[in-house]
Length: 227
Image 1 (tube, helix red, strand yellow):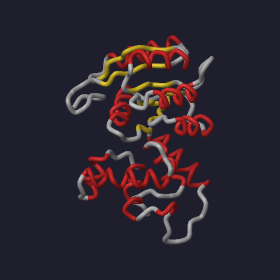
Image 2: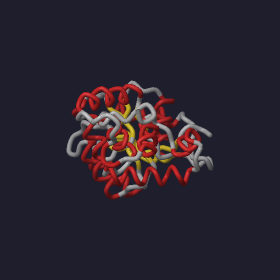
Image 3: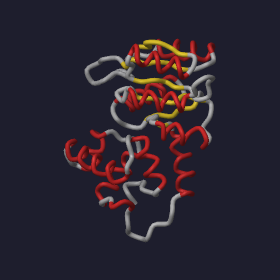
Image 4: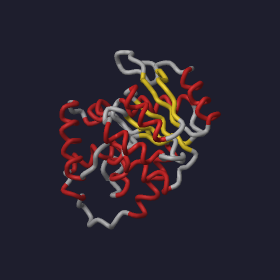
């Protein structure tokens, strides 16, 4: 399967958002060279991004964060609320906590820094389309460090919010970036079983999507197979 494309070979329709013209045009040019990706438009700020999502209904928005008029976090929140089928991957210079956490809370499912290469961007686009979190290794480490420091102590052998051991195991695999199919293969169960576990753990933890589930897993130390 080509980068970004679905299993049936349909290319990923992508909108690029960045307030710097040179950067925006460079990203558009880079994506145009990658198989399985179709750039449907570009926007210079969050307001324009919201309008273009309404017009083009892209599969994925590559979103800068710090922009005039409407920043990337607010644009992400508005896009995810009005167009839940459109995923957002943040592509920014910043990987600090003040940028990372608000973007994930707003509904972004991917987060990359602008030193990412074309292959990493394409992989993140494909990941979020398949339901996985498109987080760079640097961002995943940042989440682990920040949220592990902040998590409250748990009594030995207990899990938060009434999670079962199997649900915690599934959550840990989500935090590793595995798709539903990969989780099913790892646990030797069917995809429908994995989906049931995910629906249950989402309801118990009050997370809306996989990116928030990753943050929850790191915050509560549910990593490495639920240990």
